[in-house]
Length: 88
Image 1: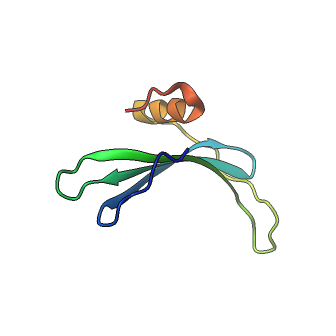
Image 2: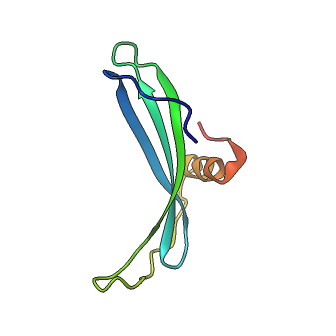
């Protein structure tokens, strides 16, 4: 989802985290913000979900490690990425 451009001179900030791991792929949530360099105020400008596949030197898929959710914050991020909107 794209909600608007980032003006010249503003800071572009990207936050990303893996929230799902398959056999050979991971799904990543990416949130983009415009940050005012003077006030530190942030405005969300983009949300994206990206799936990446792990491959070996021959381009063949390889297994990825199991995704471990060890902290309450990680659980909130995963829930938000999956669509319930409960992240910080």
